[in-house]
Length: 319
Image 1 (tube, one colour):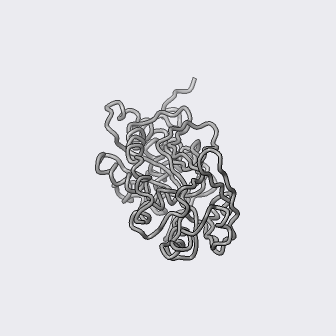
Image 2: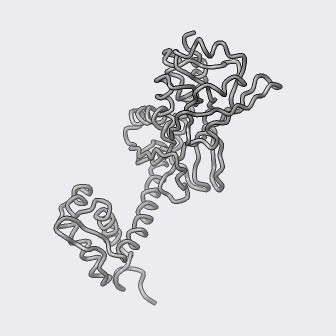
Image 3: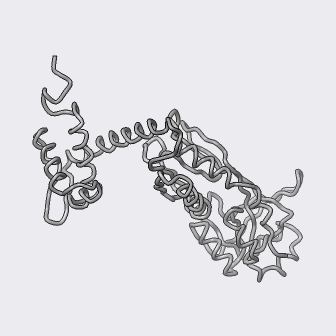
C-alpha cells in the first residue's frame, strides 16, 4: 500500500506542498511573481522556485511566463480553482479555531445592494473595524444577488423580499417606501386630493425595480389605489433617482433609508404622507449549514443595532 506522505511521490502529504498552493494562487491573483512576493512578504526568488518545484514534481506546465506578466495554462486555470477552494476552506478552518476564543478576527466577506451598501453598510463597516481591529472587511456592492453557496461571501444583506432557497436568514430591520418630491413641488402636491391625481405629474422611474411605474397606495385597512405613472426619466440606480428628484425633475418613490436625510434637511418633501406604500424587510442571509464565525455574528448584531425606528420618525422633515 502506498504511503500517504510525500515519500511516495508528489502530492499534498506535507505542509511544504500546501505552502506551494498558496504561492501559486498568489501569483495567479497578483499577476506577476514580484507582486505575489510583495503580497506574501517573501522574496521573488522563493515564490519562483516553489512554483517551479510544483510544476517539476507534477511534470505539468501551470504558467506561461513573459517579461511583463504571468498567465495560467489550461491546466493552471483548473488547478487554481481547486487551490482557491482548498485555501478558502483552510482559512475558514483557522477562523473557526480562532472563534473558540470568541473574539472576532480575520476577513469578513459580505455583499449588499449598492444603495443600501453605501448608505447603511459602509458606516457599519467603519464602526465594526474600530470595534474589532483584528478584522478586515471585503464588501461587494451589487444589485445582482451573488450566489452564497459559491463560498465567495459569508454574509449577504438583502433588502426587500427573499426568494432564495437553501439559505438561512435573519430579519435585522424593515424599510418603507416613500413618495417624494423637491420643495419646488410643495404647492402643487398639497392640492392633491389622493393618489388618483398623481398620474399626470412627471415621474422618475427606477428601472432596477420590477414595476417601476406602477404603485399600490393604501390608507387604513380599506382604502387602496393603484397608480400608473408616466415617467419622463428612467434611471437604474436608487441614488441616481434620489438625485434626479432633488433636482426638481419630478416625483418618485424611494426607500426610507435613502430619503431620510434629505427629508430631515428639507431637500425633499414627502408627498401624500397619509397614504402608505408597500414596506419590506432587511435580512442578513447566510449559506445554509455553515458555521457562523464570531466576525459574522458580531457584524449582524451591529447591523441590527443600527436599524432603529428613529429613521422613520425623521421622515417628514420641515413642513
